[in-house]
Length: 142
Image 1 (cartoon, rainbow, N blue to C red):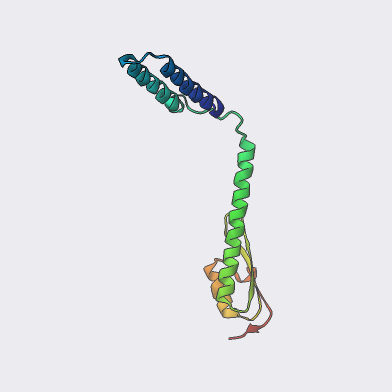
Image 2: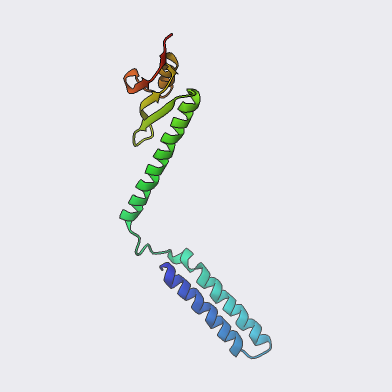
């Protein structure tokens, strides 16, 4: 049962129960009609739990594309966060970080006055070798 037919069935059950309530004679019989109508509406509401929803019209390719877009947004945000952390650690510098598809840092470029030893220590924290770290601008020597 897809969503559209579920809504149609639920609407039909409600309309049927309303008509049954209008046509039932007054008295104790009307109470039983309302009770039966309530059971019909509840059964219609619970139908997806017993039959399950069909995924007709669901496109796996568009779902994969949405996942890829979400992953790209998360990786871009991760890269921006790492750049902000690096810039906070080295005041007056601009940081450029490259990450791979898993979010691992592949290269780090720091532009501005940064202490080389501090930058190399920071690179170790990011699991980078020295050749993937570039410091441009003024460097202070130990």
